[in-house]
Length: 306
Image (tube, rainbow, N blue to C red; front, side, top):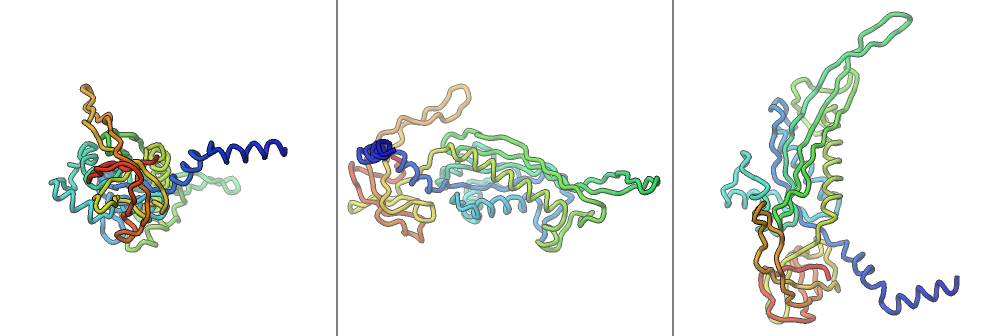
């Protein structure tokens, strides 16, 4: 046992474990995500509390859960809507994976979340219950919510996940439900069968986002370099910590697949290395870094994990 402990101490002293330790600290950096408005393809018979549509309601739930998880830096809805208007992309299905990737690049996000609500409503059925030899019909309600989900890597425009999530909640006819699928309050919606089915579907969506985004590399960008300092567009709110070091890369010409049109990346050139000295710039949305090596840092250069 003493020999094993001595060996571990020797490995640490030689720096062999340094890469894994650095990787663990870097895991705190949050991926930047944009949630686009989900379409309502459920037939339009239901409404959220407050009068908003089903697509808007599901979008808001997904956005809220991503923020609450503390694992993502989610773009504010107003900022996303403003850019969509500037790019002449409305809310009528004009947003495609390709245009979402383009908008995502402009916003500096790594992952675009989009999709549609395909089912949202109650289903009825009957079951039989026998009491003392007498067969009685018992009404049952079932609420079904289904969501088509697409996750887009904004760097390449590739759809990294296309899946359907479908959740059902069952209850007796006495269960809280609403035939017209209209709700007056958050509590009324949450207590309904369709509200519970929606919650279950959204939780599964968040799980899928977590699994698929974990494989994507974290990135930030250089905002400006001046007076020997480099400012990047990720800070304390994005999980960037003081003392972390990053490499800065300059993107080369995009490598476009001639068959699929997908961006396969580029041959990047390393500009240098920077170290975070202040992660509270812009209320924690940006960081000030000291140059460790290299020069000629420019706006738009990519900031990556070492």
